[in-house]
Length: 267
Image (cartoon, rainbow, N blue to C red; front, side):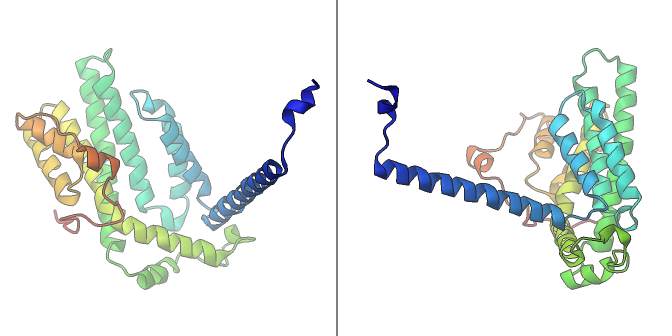
């Protein structure tokens, strides 16, 4: 029997394949235009920095995270060169990423001596302090502004006649930046809580337990779903590490919603 006889398709099968291929093709076309639209709405002045941060996130996460700090440095240089990003929350993200990377190295590099470990922990706290300072200053400046107020304030530095926007839809980019800031207003307490937790972790490993306790408590006052701070606090008090429940692991709280105590940025 000829080989082709094994692959005879019925009329119904051919129709099904045609529909399936058409749907797949439409999905690909939609994805191309969708992501192209997203990229075209990103600020061209800093889009390279966003790619660098995404690349860092994909490579970092272990004791060797410091090997990729060049990506963070390049992103920081881009943000600092643009007037309306120089002191934005993105800079705080970069400093906290460096803090986290050094903390992981200090905690998990078994070949490091105590002197080098302490120096690394202190350096990580310097980066952490920078992220906290930026987050707190940004929150005071932008945290309570309405969408209209954000647009008005942003318009003083982000201008359509900037040559960087030539060939782009400025209004789309401007609206996207407003949305990013509005989302960051919700996210800022969580980000600050993470930085405070990192500082508390550094204090804990420097055997400064009272200071660690205070920072973990403050971190939880800003974001009560901060399980890292909760777990560290439990251990400091002689308890066991805290793990999130099964349901909470599968369905974590919506980070776009403010948590209990999230508006208390005092100190």
